[in-house]
Each structure stands twice: as structure tokens, then as C-alpha cells.
Amino acid sequence: MENKNINININNNINKNISINSIKTITMPLVPYLGLMLVILIFYITTDGKLFSPYNTRIVVQQATALSIICLGAVFVYSLGELDVSIGACVGICTLLEINIINMGYPLIVGFIAALVLALSFGLINGAFSSWLGLPSIITSLFLMFVGGGVQALITLKSNTITTDYDFTLWKETWFQILMLVIVSLIVAYLFNYTRVGKYTKSIGANKVAASQSGVNVFKYRIIAFLIMGFNVALASIFILSRSASSSKATGGGMHMDVMIALIVGGMPLAGGMKSRFTSALLGAFIYVILTNGLTLSGVGITYVPFVKSIIFIVIVIITGRKKGGILPR
Image 1 (cartoon, one colour):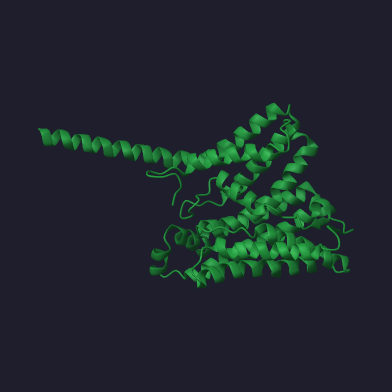
Image 2 (cartoon, rainbow, N blue to C red; image 1 turned 180 degrees about the horizontal axis):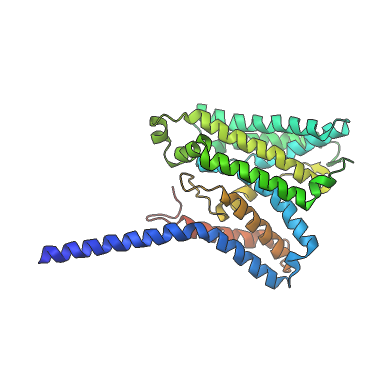
């Protein structure tokens, strides 16, 4: 009789754990969507509807487009469980390179190709050297961040800001920005969900040793992940450049943190792996941009905006990353 009661209790506990895990599995992916709706609702009220004024909507779309495109590339790197802090430096040099080439009389496509080669070089160095040396990518990307910052300073030595007279009207059109974002999103969705690139990067993030023993070429797919991000950084640099048709040594500063915060707020696991979703890029980018924009429109002083965002960020990390025996997933 006693054994029977013990078995019943064990079965009840198992069923309870299964139910709790099932609920978490269903609800956790919905959290970023609820977060986006909550942010929109709060700032729609606090800004008296100014959040959705035609002018402000254009600003939000413009800012979110560039950030979303970079984040869509970064999901491949983050799904590996890796970080890249050289994104801002790469964006800065790309914009400076594009401006100088345009000012030399060449079309924008030539500037984009040059920026693409540079961004792909950043990705190749990050992916290859971190694998060869057995280092976390944050180490190699930190090196590139300092080198890139130095190059930006040298290029802008004579003039703090370099401008161009190129007509970026098309790139500033809201419909064009949305169209490009949709195209990039569809391509990334296909690559991330239905090809070996996405499946293998997630499996490497989940367990690199197991992935390698299963026949996955870890070295190859790490490099591919960083190259995809490099392409997206080069593309996003044109949208960033189109805002003011100018670039300085400060352009791109802190972009790596914007990407990191956006992805985590959007639901990207800090350790990468099979739970990584490309939708984290889109949700996180729009939440981050609307949050920044809404705080400013609500009358929060610009000096306090980073503080408020940091509080929200750490709360989200604690809530979404909580595990037994610790806070972060790893």
C-alpha cells in the first residue's frame, strides 16, 4: 500500500512537471510579442499618440530598419553562442568608405562593394581566427573593434565629419525601407529555418562537441555565420549613411550593444542553441527603437534614457535567463 502511494505521488509530480514545462514551452516564445505590444501601448498613452504621428513613424521605421538588418545577420552568430563587439567599428568604417568612394565620383554600388569586402573581411577574421586559436569570438572582435576605431580616427583626422551630396532619397523612403527589410527577413528565415546553415549553427551553439561528432564542419559553419552577418552589416551601413549623408569617428559607436540588447530583449538565448529564433531580431529591434523613441517623446531627459534602458534590460535578462542554480544559461 505504501509503495502504491509512493508511485502515485511520483506520477503526480512527473505529470505536474510535464504540465509546467509544456506551459513554459508554449508561453515563452510569446513573451517578446507581448513585450512589443506592451511597449507600444505604454508609449502611445504617455506620448498622447505622438508615437504614431507620420513624422515619428518614419523615424522609427528608419532606425529600426538598419538595426533589424544587422540583428538578422547577428542571429547566426548568436545562435553559435558567440558575441561580436566589432559591429560598430565595422559600420563606422563602411560608411566612411562609402562616402569617400562616392565623393571620388563613383556610383553607390561601388562604395557598397568596397564596404561589403571590408565587412566580409571582419567576419572572416572573427570566424577563422577565433576557431584556429580556440578563443571566444569576443576576443578577436575586441581586437577588430580597437583597430576599426583607430582607422575611423585616422580617416577623420582632418575633418571630424565627412559629408556627401549624394541623393539618398530612395533609401530614406519608408516603403523602400520596409520592402528591403521584408526581403532580408524572408531570406534569413529560409536560411535559418530550412537550410544546413541555420540548423548547424544552432546545433553548434547547443553542443559543439556533439555537433562535430555528428559530422558537422564546425569551422566552416562558424565562418559562414560571421560572413552572413558581415553582409548584413554592409547593407545596413547604407541605411545608416542615408540618415544624414555624413559619417564621423563616432558613427557606429555602441552599435554592438544595441544589437546585443535588441536580440536578448527579442528572446534570443544568451547561450544560443536550438531555441534561437530569427524573429528575435525583428521583435527586439522594434522594441528597442520604440523604447528609446518613446522615452524621449515622454519627456525623459536624454541623459536618463540609457539608465532606464539598462534597468529594463537587466530585468529581462534575469527573467528570461533564470535557471536552477544560477541566472544565466551558461
